[in-house]
Length: 315
Image (tube, rainbow, N blue to C red):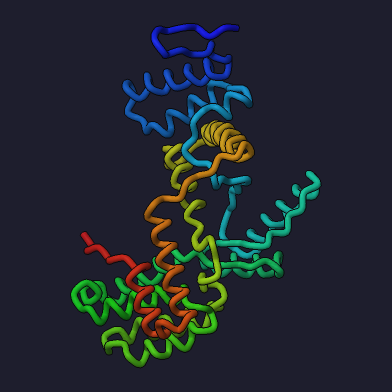
């Protein structure tokens, strides 16, 4: 078919059925956005699922996330080791049923003891890493529970010590204990309870290998936490019945299919500029330390200025 001339140098091709489908989807989304007090993301997901787009149209339709998505959703009745192990057994069973190999090489989670034990038992060869975000949150909460949050904000030495504790995971693993011992000797007396907590828990009870992130590309499970928040927003009820839950799962399945198609066709999610700058600075500091341009103390102090955030005042 020939192109339709619009005038001057402008012309357009007749729309394919897929593009027509996508245009209709966009119009329905725009109409609902102007009429309903619901988040744009939820409206888009609802309309995407309702449209029943073809595989080709799903590839054409826009998407906000193209790098990470859940493959399995598990509803657990508790957080015990036996429950986690039963979940892993179920995943292994269904992987075998589908002729898939379920032997993860890398696992990232929070620092829940029962989960750590379950992973160690079921996947002994996997590299299990703790989420760096959860690590810093534990330190933040301890600072506050010890009544050090005011000192943190107002005392430079206290703040520096706390931030260096948070930055320890970015050091080479073999340097962490020595750096911590130096930090203990130089820390203000008021921080002693925090130092004792760190020594008794993070050095003694939790393997340093679990919270060291210097060698990792992915240091957090924020993508999972983000999905949990997104899913809770889609549920939008405190006690949903099973039918409402299933309907939201169906919508998620369509969103998942679209994301998978985008990845299979080569689409990639761009890193945020802030993330890219942070990675470059971390790499620069690492190179300077490896080249003996800065010593261990300078390295840790520099890291502490990059990776730690201020504690906001309690309201």
